[in-house]
Image 1 (cartoon, one colour):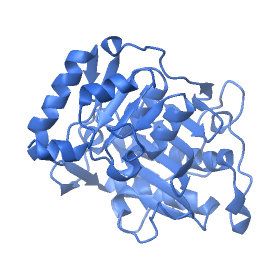
Image 2 (image 1 turned 180 degrees about the vertical axis):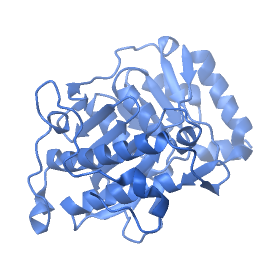
Image 3 (image 1 turned 90 degrees about the horizontal axis):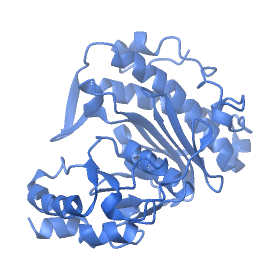
Image 4 (image 1 turned 90 degrees about the vertical axis):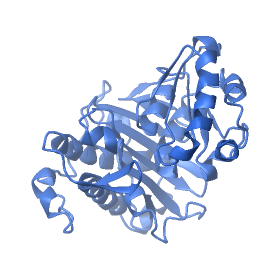
Length: 323
């Protein structure tokens, strides 16, 4: 049994019974962890050379346990929550899920750093370091979760510096696990996934996220939204960037854009999308998304058209200038 974090005593009944042996169901190939290898190293310095597939197995284990916890919490009365900033919510459930994930990940890689949403100010979370870093969003879609809208996920990525090695986006309500290890392709519940083959933006379904942390730029954002709206077939707002990226990787969406995200929102989904054949960039088509959080993601075929329709090559800075 994983111990409940002592600072969240009300979560005891929710985490009770969660064990390392809990696994997602067997894949069609009969392997646990949706067909990925078992861990090659459980702890200690021997894990320093863990390959991307072994790191992925650790991430999938953590996502499984967190997913079970979130589903049990979802069935209970709405817990209290705080606003970190206007519209940016955090609950006891977020923090408990994060503690579970950290315990499992550090069990397998005790030398690793952690960059996690609910502990983002920790000094060991520098993702420019070459040390192995776990980038964790223990509950992407907190507002959805608290309002019982069943669109939320756990997002876990492993990185060394800016090199993403493994990523998992697990949607416990739909029981879908989107996974990727660097150079190994992307899967959903063990089956290979690829991006859509649609090349016409006018026939493309997209997703976006509102600038809820920066409501003063809403008018400028809506100008961008209107431009893209007229250029594409349709736009959805799911409320969880990790799911937006995973769905783009699986070919359910052709693209996604949003301004001002954090690394834990996008790290796992970005790797999964790339391994599925997609493209991730900033609004100029470059790699600045890692630092700015201004991200455009697509199947690659509509990417230039989406950038042209957004017409904000400087990302958030263009919205601020127009506000």
